[in-house]
Image (cartoon, rainbow, N blue to C red; front, side, top):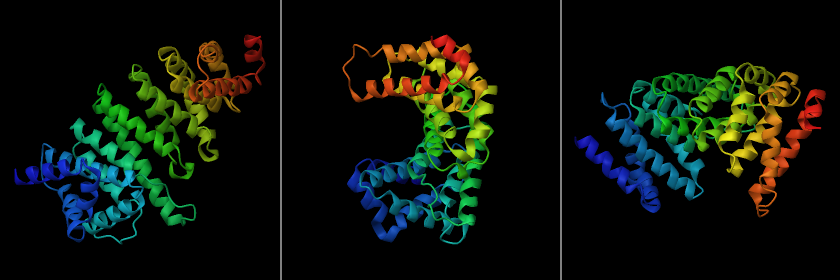
Length: 323
């Protein structure tokens, strides 16, 4: 009870940015060290871990607002390394321990939601000049995380908030160099399953399309991702999102971009887009904003629709359908 009350107070203090930053810096970092220690506290219900992760999430959010996230993440790695008694420059120790904490309490959906939010905040890609050892550490951590997210997704199939935070995290991971994600097929399967299962969420539709677009525009992952997307009916899932959220500019734009990305140099995906009525959906996305004010989102939707049609019409059957 003392642990829970103390962590609850810290979490409340961390809701205000300036106090959250002071909390992280107080007593020479001992408060942060104690927070990190709390993750390994024996608690079957996971309540202590939830409070700890929530406090760390709020503190990391404060550092993001102050444009000092890099400093915070470096310190977090140091505190986590102390727990594992590993060398201080371990690049992904924080990600590994948070993933382990979530895995230990995989039945507690609230803990996994907060864990995904914290991971989204602290996930920073490997430096451009990183050595092979660092890149391998990132790759192992990311692949381990994606594998765990598969497991917890199956455990909490109907939990919308968990899957929304999960797909946002996957979207951020997909934004970076494909060398960090070597297990491409499981990533694709997970994203498409989430999009199919929760087709009533515009957040999942938006970030799911971003995942598929990003992974198909990276040289290291595209050649593996595109055939798997075709095998999982990815084009049908994307066009369903367009139909479901026809008035959402962002979803329409990202869906068009995703269709272009999966169809690039892929005749099977182009045919799949045609078969599921993708061209009609793209034209609807373009035409929907003909009478709308020409704001940034509507213009971007038109642009992405034109790019997608250009990619698709390199296939003669798609060109015939358009004409």
